[in-house]
Image 1 (tube, rainbow, N blue to C red):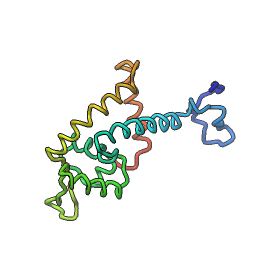
Image 2: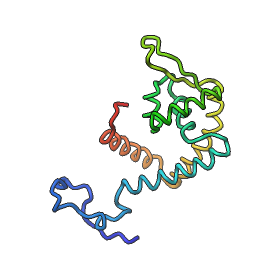
Image 3: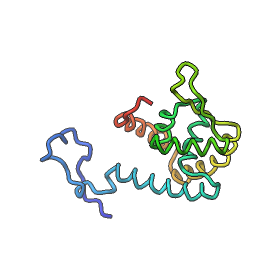
Image 4: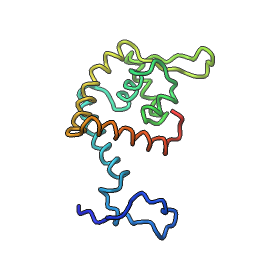
Length: 168
């Protein structure tokens, strides 16, 4: 796809609709949301295929991943961190609890709030999934230097702060 736009994409005068560059002028390959969506769609497809062989869903993997690095989280927090709708997360937790991978219990100071934690069996299950995720990361960033990766993470964190709806 030929690049035709030589102007600035991130312009401070973009408030005036008459001065906005068109998507055609910018080009899809210079429109970051398009590229991020394309990259993550491919990542999700690749990971889902490998997870099927381990008999685990993407939602289950995301929940176990978050819980593997967090001692306890609420269902709402888990939904945010795992980038999963709360209704989907509730069903996912039902299945993970049946498998013995997670435990849900009321918070001691507020019985209305349920906290979720990973079990030893859940950690063992995630330990089988982690190599798949890490290999995917290495494939995605093949040829990217460590300092480029760190700068990229810094940029992603700035973007997340700009668009997030939750404090977490």
